[in-house]
Length: 175
Image 1 (cartoon, rainbow, N blue to C red):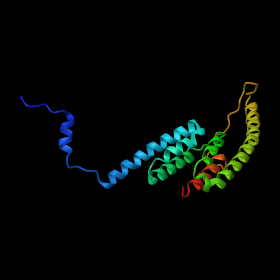
Image 2 (image 1 turned 180 degrees about the horizontal axis):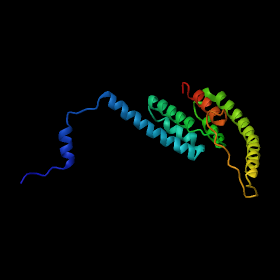
Image 3 (image 1 turned 180 degrees about the vertical axis):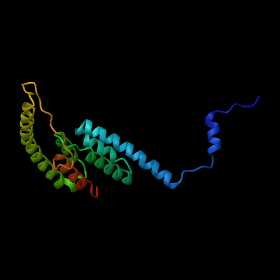
Image 4 (image 1 turned 60 degrees about the horizontal axis):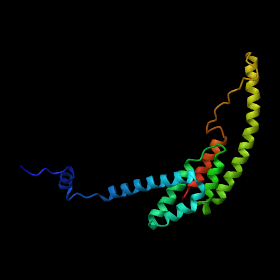
């Protein structure tokens, strides 16, 4: 009876002489960098006080990989900014990253403009709620348990969402 070969032996035999093209190698490298950057980004968001530790570990990478990872981390954090109060924590985190040196003025301007926008939105919200409650009262719906529904904001309304989109573009330029 002949020798029974393992699946691995069969695969190795059939793939001998095959090699990855340069495009395939580049694609594998880019995918690996994206996954690692996502992991670093998640760690930063979970515990922002580990920024120095994370960037020290990036220092062990090759120069090209380190720059690519830093860029991917920055891009991912900027793209994940949301037009609500949680943006302030994210901005504090972004200010600790190496790219913040060049983008510091834009980050500070975004923080100031967003603070003003949230204050204005709070005032407008009260006016809209009163108006909505009056509409409900004219329909015969009133009482202390009635809560008026706020209309949804779209990014074309000129509110925090559109403001944030403009700043995201500025933060991602040449990042």
